[in-house]
Length: 229
Image (cartoon, rainbow, N blue to C red; front, side):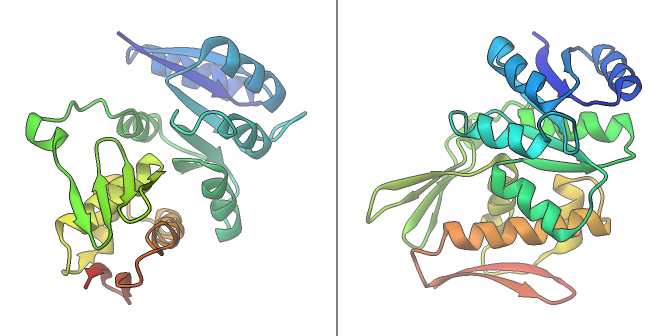
């Protein structure tokens, strides 16, 4: 069964090109050309994934995603953007985006990121049952749930943050090279993706902040290390 995609992009020529390309790869694509129309179409069709431009008329991609995330924390959202500052990336992730793709982009890269967010690779039985204990937390990569055991508070991590935390957990106590994380999750270790990683690491530190013994250390010029004392 094909995945249902809502592509919200005001550049109609680009929208048509992307739609045609994705439909040759077994995606079902619905289009909207501004944030207001995109919000309405989201509630009509309930897509499996949203691909959203940031700068649009009537309602920006940021405002549209903010409205969606008030009731839907789970549907994957990928921003398309020509905006590349750290503040832009922070804004998008804080609103609930799962990934960013900088314009101009190649269709194969877009597809790879969409498939990653959709989790098309079915987990094995062993992977399905995999959980990690991190200090006072229990983390389930498959469900992206982070449980703080003393308070029983559950945090649902965005998919990309869950993927990063899983890599850190697998190598807990060891340095995970930044390049390895970027190539594994983004498929590209360019500057823009590196800054996105920095933003998501900051968000993970915040999510784990109830246990002061847990640290995600930035080993400058090398990578990141998860420490749970």
